[in-house]
Length: 92
Image (tube, rainbow, N blue to C red):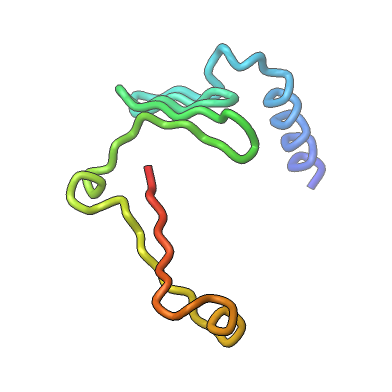
């Protein structure tokens, strides 16, 4: 049990003391940095706790529209919104 706690503390300390320039983990397939992951020509990085930026393009993105249409349902929303209102969201 003490080994697990000691190992957890060691890993956490190394992670938080790491400057982010050198990889935390590196393999033939991908590399993990403190705030980014790289796999071949693709990469993702953390911009903020709410945002991640990536240059990955999904194959499904080419085959399907990025427009999502939806209609709210429920007693309260039926009272507030007029009939036939459809919401739309465009994904990246």
